[in-house]
View 1: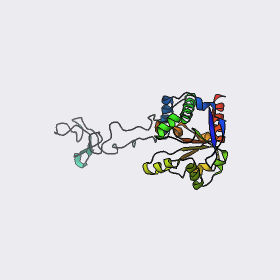
View 2 (view 1 turned 90 degrees about the vertical axis):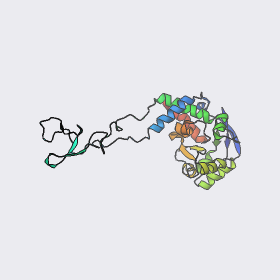
View 3 (view 1 turned 120 degrees about the vertical axis):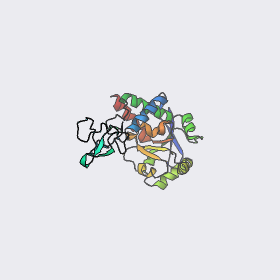
View 4 (view 1 turned 45 degrees about the vertical axis):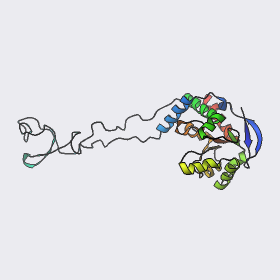
Length: 253
């Protein structure tokens, strides 16, 4: 598969061959599973205080011979607060009492992370890249036609941009600012920028509304398919494509 390389002025410079991963089979089910797995890693374990509802003097005294027993007193056989002179306080401790413990509270030991094995994840990443290279999928997700070649590949000079206004000019030249404006109004996702590690454009691009910028080494499926919906409009640099191909080579080694 070939792609057109664009300059920072939005002009087509040349054509290059994309890594083979962009021609992988599209698997929406794999992409969704990988995104849910990544998102679950960010969940915060929740649980109640171990002694919640139990820090009370209330206890059950059921034997008739016990001091201050509840038998034959016409009161519920439930844990009551200990009062002076054998008197009965309020019912505590049991779930249906005021400020009692919860019957089945959340437990911190509950497994909330959905694991996915490495090979399956790399196949999902391949599929997400293939979706990003599909004009049909990208235009369907953007709900409009994209004028530039899909995927959008930028010349490496794009990585040297250090100011947000310069990145905005590139977006304007490629007719992509409409997605940034839409993100300002609706809070939706704008195009994704993928560059090589250490590129100054990564910091500059993040200041645009809805735009995410990530290095090729840290690229995840959730970046390419936010909300499990694949086909996000993405700008790759030539160096980033090489790093992406290198990740798959290392995974297969």
